[in-house]
Length: 249
Image 1 (cartoon, helix red, strand yellow):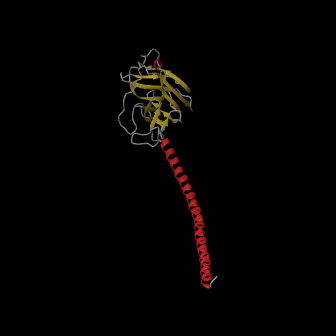
Image 2: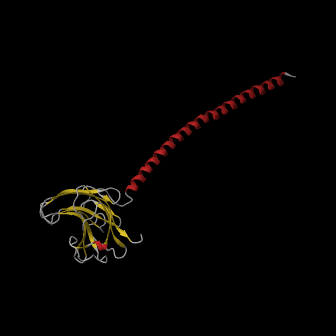
Image 3: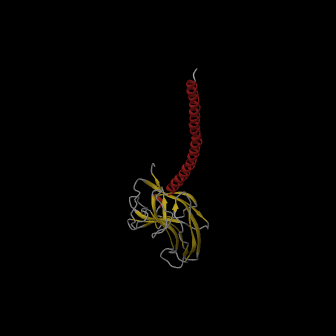
């Protein structure tokens, strides 16, 4: 074996070792990319946390939407506070009637029948015409000043009303119909009561008054404590639930 051959063989061996070293270093770089990948995965984990945060925000948004799904704003506007009572909707009000001297509390919140209560209290003047009334328009869109008639016809059999009497006083339920006559039901009991249309008569505190015909419309209802000619009347009552009773709902 000559000297040139040995030198060439040695050269090949050295070159192979060097190539192997470079190859190992490249593999090391690939392995070193794995921690980077795992770090990216960690960043991905952070992204997942961000996604959860977004989902939380989305849930909050859904909750806010569900609060307004009824279409009612709980804030007052220039017309007052809005009431929803079954198929009736309109603005609530409190009133002492046409006779001065009585006192009644203001409406301070919106009302949705069956989801809370609205209360009034006060003192009535010594006069039959003094009243402590809690009422609402029954066909008025929120934000609108237009009040429309509502007519039960044969679709409704009467009115359900549930009240609490914090002071034992007479309570009446009344409305002015489209024929110009005021119809009322006298001595509405505390607790739930189904008032049929035949219970509403003209001058209901007297017997034999004209009975309301449900083909007539009306645009507002009110419940009230009536005054007395002999003494001041203190009253305090709450409305829990109220709605027109559907026939075969």
